Image (cartoon, rainbow, N blue to C red; front, top):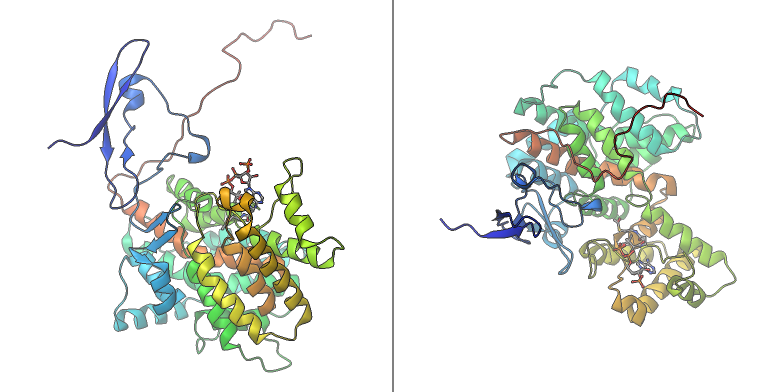
Length: 433
Ligand code: ACO
């Protein structure tokens, strides 16, 4: 067998090493450098993991150049058309689409786990009312480890399945209650007669004093947004869950670490920034072109929020799908002048940016966050809940990656190396001045 290799030469000593090239199903070949330190005494340096595959995975494939995103081999365009969020959860976790019976059993199982421990409910009272709902999400999800400490043998596949079912089922309850608590509203229990997304909207918005009916168009749009955010391979929060899980940490605590990472504005907070920017433009005396001019000015730190992506150098495939729903939902809400003004600004910005040489030459296309915030606004979801919904959607991705890592023959604690640039070893001074 002639496996492909690359040769690395130390030009100083002339020492050479052949490094094996691993072939993925699709995507760039990957050089295996795991024995580089042992064989050559070198570390590699790659801050931000620009060229480093941190693990082997069979869950999600994405290609930034061609704009492809596929879960377990199925392009998201096909899943968006034919599937739904809960079925996609099954696909991501188990690796295959469920047959009817398996899906019904899965749905029943998720329904059974939607309640949260009554004592956990009291936990909310410990937070200040003005706490950010993401802070509550981190705290309450981490606290699941104190309330659900049965079925926590991470080496046991059944226990891992129970953990996954609990997390998928309880996240909407925890998320909706973080909103209810901040707004002084009574907690609404899950309703098993509703589907997954409808149930979340019901727990967010229904009040005891008047009947509440979930609008099908809202549930459909939210379900699509959740499906499109369910996984995105080794992003910062998923890598965090993998790294903390690699120490055999409690899985609920590992997912809480993922939520904390997602909270950062460079990761999950961008759609909030988009709405903030669109509202600023609507309320400002400056024209849209003035904002575009600022975005292009090297001496101005202002950027057009919702444009550009670290990996996608073409149209974000999720943005294409969500754009259509964004228009559909806004037609439904015609007459809402504030929303219409925001959409007008968004569409003008989109048009200018897609035709402007600055954006074209830098491959800056609207990303998924550009549209999702507008949809959330139309549904009535406040801005500080945007990232909460993202974390609820991404939980399945985190737990699928954690499960995949735990299934591997050899689980190794993640332990990156460093390029040390501090002081060399020195002696403690006899007298300190
Ligand atoms: N507006 C104006 N100029 C931009 C923008 C933008 N939104 N994004 C990138 N550029 C410019 C940069 O100034 C740079 O120009 P230069 O080559 O003349 O110096 C060039 O495009 C490349 O920019 P980088 O920062 O190197 O691109 P990178 O791929 O590292 O950044 C990022 C990607 C962080 C998403 C960036 O495009 C950005 O800040 N966008 C706005 C924030 C946003 O929408 N984030 C959400 C990302 S999607 C998600 O997380 C789900």
